[in-house]
Image (cartoon, rainbow, N blue to C red; front, side, top):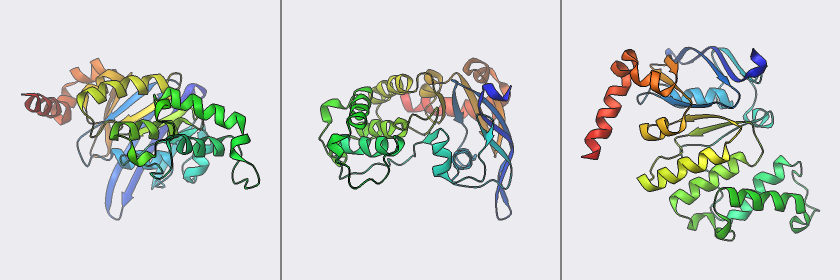
Length: 258
């Protein structure tokens, strides 16, 4: 069964001093599934992402990527094994153009590393891949624009491009639509769906519209534990989830909409 699982968390725990933040999380994400991780502030969602991507080491438990243990490995080692993540705060080179940002990510993934004697303009395969990425994220018309001069939504799209540039099969997105307007969010959900087609997606998200519009399954994290992991319909109908989180989140959204 493990061969069909893209990501597996086994009794994962993380403590900071005497505070246990992640309390025995078990989760199985099938290859190609889109999973949204939801929960109240302070539930441990970002800590969970940091454990999966190698920023934190677990206190105990295991993280498996395609059946191979990755807990304890460095973030760059995990990235090379096929897992890539974006962050809550946009993480791009502001003084480089759209093309240059994407090409930096592409060059590393294609094995060029730090080859100072090679002329970048001559690397046809890398430049071609960069052009393809620009089209995918709808920034081909902003090719030579510095990242700092893009709109916020365009910067987030660029970061998605950088995240997928290496061809990772498992993508982690941390609140990808935070700070966007409703129209930007709608377009961004469509973009995420397109660029992660055929990949495994794990995303932390507060916007329930995004969650229900994007996810095949939802993992609900409360006080460092997964209290539900099921389809959006089943999670929406789960009394335990409504009591712990979903009811208040939906109520907040409705209040905000009036």
